[in-house]
Length: 361
Image 1 (cartoon, rainbow, N blue to C red):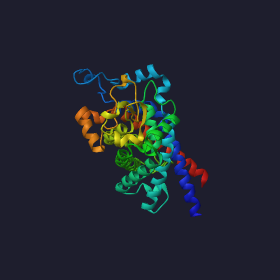
Image 2: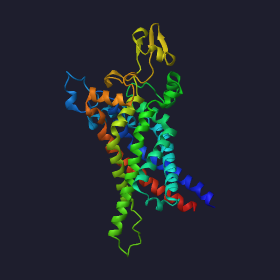
Image 3: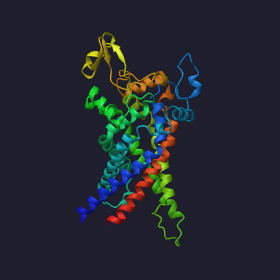
């Protein structure tokens, strides 16, 4: 009987996680597209700095509202959901794995499979469980995250018209390892991000329960432990905002590693030719095609393949070339997106989980 319930519990967590992730990603896709465009733009993303022509070339995007108008004018309404299919294919297994692993870890830590008992775990265990669950989910869904970033950032004219063409070209030019480009900074980012998101969410839930106890009305049918949908929404809102605000610079670095330029150069002038030769194809005599993403020049300078040696070098180069503001490119749409995304995810998960649990018991 216990084994049967464990299987049901795993199914509940996986299904509720997939549903909540899919809803959240679809709702917040426009902000995610704008955020990615900002993160892969080497030029400043605010209008005042972009006017310093002696230091910078004109920027494509200089603000959230300006970017929204430009994307709508050039790419139409569908442009805000560019890459949403691979995003769903990424986020649904991601959140499914994440919530399943998270529940399992909390069960091991608390000695109980009941969700109500997990709220009593220490904050440290909540943070660690969230971080490990985030790592497991990242490893299981990363290729779709990579393709989603590439499709969302390419602009017009398109380099890849479909998800399949992007997958095929990446595997053809970089091999299967190319599908995991930028994995290291992603894992470094997801550990504090997932830890903060789930750790702070549990903390805010405990605070909300304490508030309910202090204002408990005995005539009410609701128990202090039963949070309202609005309270869950606020807890998710706060946890998503906190996690994204702290970890945004690492997300910028991740996006830079995921998107590299694609250009033709003379083989004799490329220092890394011998190292890259097996992953390149000749287009014309004396010319080599370097794998990656090539956008229209109107989108500004491109992130070159050899731009960053490693994550630390990327952080250092971004600060040197773009200032500390470069580490926070896209922070406005990112935080605006993270707040409702976290809120929608947790509300959808809690309600879907409760509904599935009620019909499967």
